[in-house]
Length: 393
View (cartoon, rainbow, N blue to C red):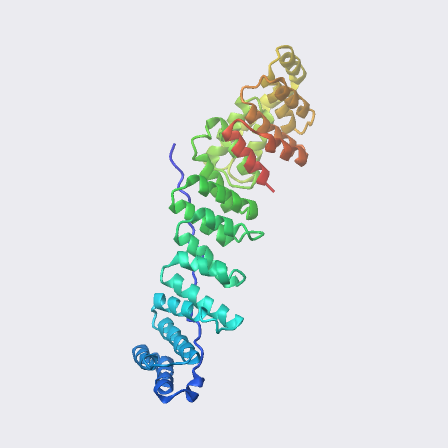
């Protein structure tokens, strides 16, 4: 079977950073001239984006001996502004860390310096440090939530990224898409599948459903026996189908003793404008007439078929009869299906429970349908498909 390649989404979580503003050095007016004059000149050069000149002037001030704590703080603040402005991100990150370690900043200044440190660390490619800074100082600053997500993404720490995204209720669509891309880049198909399930759970768009179903159908565990089950799910969530699909699964339903379902499939294809048109219109009509005759014969022999299945203890036939009754709008078929499951005589019990849930849903008994789907165990393919039906709104 050809492997399914997850679609990759380019997220909009690209962040443009601005350097954190440095503190004005107006206090330089009261400093000794050997320190104050070069500081004022450095500030003027910085404002004019003459970074090399600004740094040279700043170093003149920094070279003076016997500086006070306030003078050192002013020098370090201006250095952070110069390094951030000239794009020396690693140096700027260290500058902000140095300022935060002085113990001379107010809480507001500490937050401002932490923002500068995290921004500079991210731009320097030091994502581990970025995460540490945000978790320590900026967990409640909304714009840094996106930077945190991107840092985990850059480190390929998909599980950690997913846990952060899921902390929000509901999780952001862009965040889940970033997690999907992370797992896809890591070639972790299980992670991709689980994330697409989360996308469908919170954002059940046709595109997300199509992606999820396509992803799971490509897995070897989903054999041809479950192909009709996938088609039923696609129809339930409103996905389009091809002419080939409508014909194939209508014929499959007839072969399984479900002519009522086959008729519904043909009617759905006709309503969608796929069947009964173009070059294949005549053959479509012929098939629908054939199915209608099979349905009429099935209905005429219903009582005899039920009696014979019970006499032969033929659980499979009894289950199909009940399922077809439900497709025809007769809820009495639910009892036959339940009896067949309880008998223990079905070869694929997990698939039967999956179909039992569908029958409950068709009968308007959604609570029973959900309970049945939650109980499906033992058959990985049927169990996974049942989990998808739980997500159907």
